[in-house]
Image (cartoon, rainbow, N blue to C red):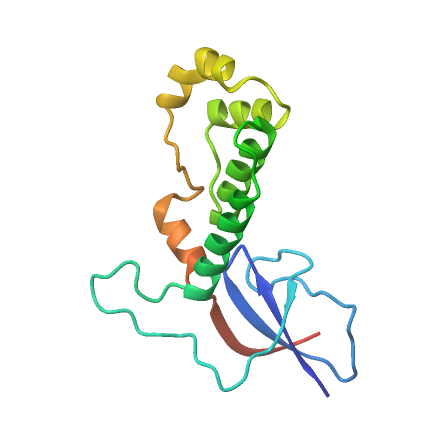
Length: 163
């Protein structure tokens, strides 16, 4: 009788689900917020990711592996990029925002879309430069606290739910 783990990105919590038989296709809804089709997780055993953060250190307890993997992916993508290719630069910037869970402001989003389409970077700067400069470049839905929460390992709900 297997126990499956599922992750809810909205709650940033891993939940345990009991199944009376092997069930590899079912994806339950989140017990807390109701989000449908949670993400199945690979179960870890004998590994503790819940480090105690020292008081006053907002960066303590970050999931270092996740942050390192995101940075390595970005470095690898940047190595193969041609210097004069606005499409590649736009894709790289878009991936940076996506990997960090950030949303570019409307001006920067428009600029990235135009870069990805191959528009001239100087023309984009001339048309959108002031608009982009007035935006918060690293805006995060929910603010910096929400970004830090996503970079930390998820909480684990020890309740055993039925699958």
